[in-house]
Image (cartoon, rainbow, N blue to C red; front, side):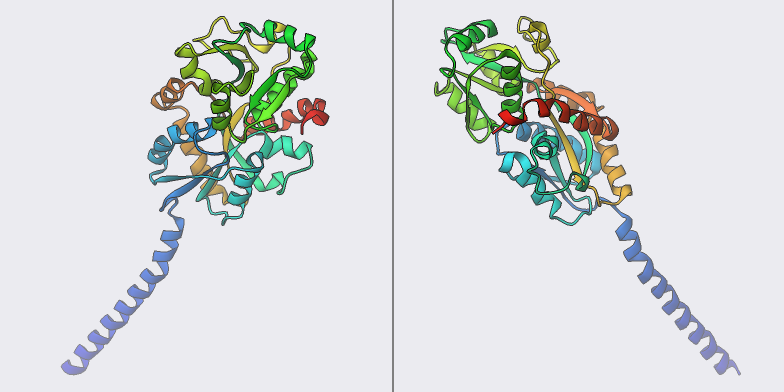
Amino acid sequence: MKKNGNKLIRDILILLGIFIFTIMSFNTPVKAAEEFPSRPIEFVVCWGPGGGADRATRILGPYLEKALGVPIQITNKSGGSGMVGVSYALNKKPDGYTLFGLHQFGTYLADVLGELPYDLKDIYPICNWIDNINMWAVLKESPFNTYEDVSKYAKENPGKLKMGISSSRGSQGVGAEFLKYQAGLDIVPVPFGGSGKALTGFLGGHVDLASLPYPMFKPHIEAGKVKALIILGSSRIQELPDVPIAADLGYEPEPFGFAGAGVAAKTSRDRIEKISDAFDKVMNDPIALAALKKAGFMPFYMDHNEFMKHIQGGHEKVMKIKERIK
């Protein structure tokens, strides 16, 4: 009897062990699946290296890494005025491990022009982080000292001035076109295929003036090599109190200069919420904001709902110059 009892106990223990192992086998994958993020996240910058979008993303990258607890790997995918990068990101698995930059042409501009290779419904705008202040500027040796100087000359000499821009469909190009439309100016745009290249061409004297984000001009303005003429948006620059904004001269500000982040709309809501919470934390971190400001960027945080309204509101102004955008 004792022998049979020991065998029964042994058999029960073996069955119990198998049961526990089976339960653990089922639970482990489920637990792993719930952990997000658990590996590096790719952030697709939809423009080339060295430009404003690239610089802002690389500044915020370390803070986003800290908030999410995983590395952020930045990938530059330029082309199509930002659409190549968005398309690349949307072709990835919608699991939250691919984020991408959101700009005007990758959203409402291309939508108005009927050129989006994807549906806007495929994009979930997470937030906006920058008011990408665009401005017109000339070199120190230029005979123009103010916007009025340029405006007067352009009206007296239509088609004579050449303006360097990143792209005719980027924020600088479209913002410049919106101002030229309101002011009745005939200035020839010269797209360089990226704000970094446009800055190089401008500094090399290949154009008469340039329309680029303030951070691109900032070190050259501080060095006395560049003169700022007008800010296209509605935000003033503390370091440049004498440079007028569009409204000062009776113009409507451009709505185009934003820079934010998006993710595939098919991403699960719980993962989107974690990513959104991380961005919210970063954009309320005074150290992160100071780093952006030091580089010349104007932090301008809009959460998902505010960002959606901003994107939707851009259609109206773009429609006014639809025929002028090439």
